[in-house]
Length: 277
Length: 120
Image (cartoon, rainbow over all chains, first blue to last red):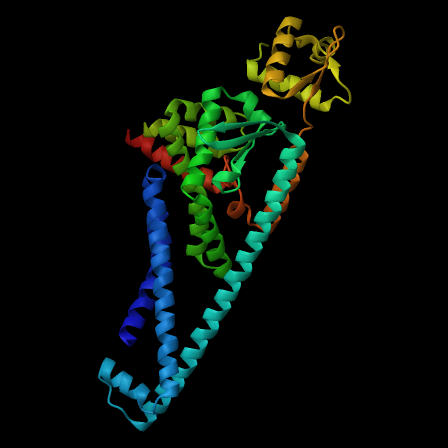
């Protein structure tokens, strides 16, 4: 049991250290964004499971050491590593086991509480945003259409905005600036980009990354996961939109929207699609 | 300088959003100054905008006026995005076409594209 706990803890630590080293290097991730995102979240989720498993075993062993006869800890060491049981070692193992067990329990409790608080805040933000968007649509919405089953609402405004709340039923909101600047085909590409986000549940990835960063604000892997998620989901949605309505339309939409130079990533995303052809 | 269709439509909408009362086509044309499009072009644009749902046309037989069908949303959207930016959770509650990408993401993209171009 102890060896399994140590192996799981080592795996969790390795994923924490190795993921940013491996997955933030090279241009491959830009041209294979789905593969890169899959690797990030496979490593992240297995790392979380390993840490949880190791913590769970640690708590269980700590509880057994505290609850069972005094020599249980030393017996455990003897069976796992072949140490000979002595009275002094018994005491050291017993105290260490109890301290580690309670510490693990306290850390797990703190993390669960932190995740629950942040998740509640996110749900609150989402509710407030939904109410704000409903009010916005009531005030400034001028057209509503159904694009292959996806509701699209157009709102009056001179800034280029296309966004969605994460649910297919919520649909997509597109501003007049995009409605006027783009051709029907280019507009469709933007809508397909948003549909890809919704179908592939990209908001869940973003939320996991945000929750992870909230738990480990100073950890590089957590920061890199948040950054990688933000970039990769956009590239994946670009690719999906290009497949659905044509690379030319998608490139043209990105180029037009990036022409004002305010968002440098738009024209770079267009260039990436052109190079990937 | 010739404007493309989308640019002309956007310029007309800007005038109507900024106007405090409905405007006639002549007034809109005057709003363009020296670079004004022909009145027939303007009427075509206004009709297209009306069909898109962006513009209302008065029922009058003469002196027809045009107004924005809805007030613009930019200030509200800006405030909404700003408040989400302050909580730091924007990317976890809202999916935007432009994404939540910054200069460092642009740099990552640029380096990857340069690498690919060099190899070709």
